Length: 372
Ligand code: ADP
Ligand code: MG
Image (tube, rainbow, N blue to C red; front, side):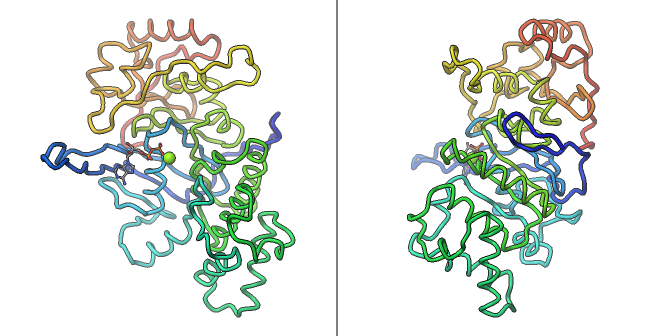
C-alpha cells in the first residue's frame, strides 16, 4: 500500500479473485435510417471485442476520450444492454438467461454509479424515500425499524452524519458531492460485489473530487468490492486505480498496471492522452494541444483504428489490425510498433526520441487471442 503525493492510497498487491469478466464483448447499435432509407442496415460499432477482468478489492480504470464506448461497455457489464457478441461471467458463471437466478443476482450485485447524481434521483422524493426503496428491495424481510437503521448505517458509511440531516431533504437541497455520496449509499444497499463508476466525479467541483474517490477506495477495500473506474482523465487513473485499460474507438488498445500505462505508455494513443492532459506543473504551457478527433464508429478506419491520427503510422497500420503485443510484464499494447522487424524498430526509435526515457524500445511478444 502506498500513499501518493495527492493523498490517494493505492493498493499494490497482486490481483485477487476475479468477480466480473468480459470476454470478447461486442456491441453494435443499429443506425436508424432517415426517411429516405439512407443509413438503414448500418451499425455503430460502439464496443468491439473487449475483454477485461475485474477483481475483488481492486480498482481498474477504463480511460478514453468521449465517444470511445466506455459507458456502453459499463452498461453491458451491468446487463443493461444485450450483447451483440461475446460473454459476461459473474463469479465464473455466464450471465445470459434473462430472469434466471444468476441474472437476478448479477443485476443487483453489479451496481452502476453515474456521472450526474442529480439525474439519477427522483426530484420529488425525499432521500429517505429513495433509500427506503432500495433497502426494501434488498432487505425484504426487515421490519420498518430495522430498515430505518439500515438507512442510517448506509449514510454513515458514506460519511453523511447525522443521518437526520439528510433523510428529509430533496435532491435539489443537497450539493453534487453529497448527492453522489447518497447514490453510493443507495448502491451499497444491494451489498454489491462490483461498482461500475462511470465518470463518478467528473461533474463535481474539483475541490471535493478527492473526497468522493477516497470514499470509493475505502469501500472497495473494506468490502472487497471490484471497482471499474470509467474516466476520460488518465492522470486520475494513475493515482486512483491499480490497473488501467485504454479504450479507443470501441476497442482496448493498451492494458497494464496504472504505473506502467501512465509512466511507460506503449500505445501512441495513450501517449497522446497523457501529453494532452492538463499538468499543473507545466502552468506556462497549459494550452490545449490540437490532438485531432476520434473517428466515426459507423465506418471505422481500416486496420488500426488510430492510424489516421498516429504520428508513427506505417503502411501495415492501415491494412491490418495489430494483435496485442506484450511489451512488459503484465502490460500489452495493440500496436504494430512492437512487431519484431526493422521498420517497427525504426518507429520505436522515433517514438523514443519523442518520449525519452519512458519509451519502450523492445519488440513485444504477440499475445494469442485466446489469452485474456
Ligand atoms: P463514452 O462513454 O466513451 O463517451 P459511449 O459508450 O457513450 O462513449 O458511446 C459510444 C458510441 O456509441 C457513440 O458513438 C454513441 O453515440 C453510441 N451509442 C451509445 N449508446 C447508444 C444507443 N443506445 N444507440 C445508438 N448509439 C449509441
Ligand atoms: Mg460516457
